[in-house]
Length: 295
Image 1 (cartoon, helix red, strand yellow):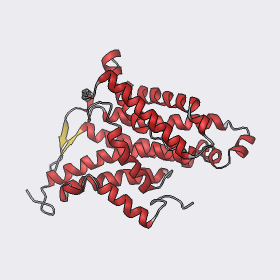
Image 2 (image 1 turned 90 degrees about the vertical axis):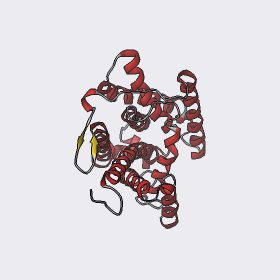
Image 3 (image 1 turned 120 degrees about the vertical axis):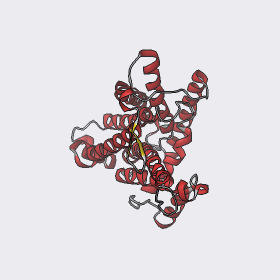
């Protein structure tokens, strides 16, 4: 078996696949954060807890109601998105016109409360969630073994990310959203319900986190801390891509997942910090991020 740069191809491409999977979650979660910040100027620290809620909703659907993975993939984002709408209507709306710091502190506190409630109910140990029968097993590609479910995660994440980008950047609804962000008074004068757009946008961004949680449930153990472990890295991805940049969130998420995976092959000691090192370097050169616009 030949080697690439002194590394067996099975190990190299296996880490590339793992990097793509991590990148899928980075991309879809940072996309949700970018949508919420870019259109609403809310720094949503509850995002990790809402990702965790998506995984738990899928787990509860299966174990309490007998609802399978495919239905949960549609149902969980709706449930998590509905909780996001309630949060926006009851809490975030009241601090919409004050400093961003208040929103950050509020959402951070909510994240701690949600994680505490789930930890109290389910404990800290992980709960298993089976891969759906249709996606079990894998395919030997010669140079690596490709598990079907992991391939599905990458494809599903990419499709959802590109569909979201198209919705916001290329449709009339997206134009309304951007207009409502830049000049809400003028937009409302044209008969557009700006408060409703704001609420639905936050709900949609949160639903993306719930969708990612369902995708993650069969790969990682479903536990109350799964979002807290990921959210700091996702915020770093958003900063690198540019706060509020939809395309930046997608491209940076997948790219940094790949870089992290390759770092585990060639320099494992740096794999836990490589994203943060890149963040520091990017901020030194482009403080607005790779795809961000300078204020």
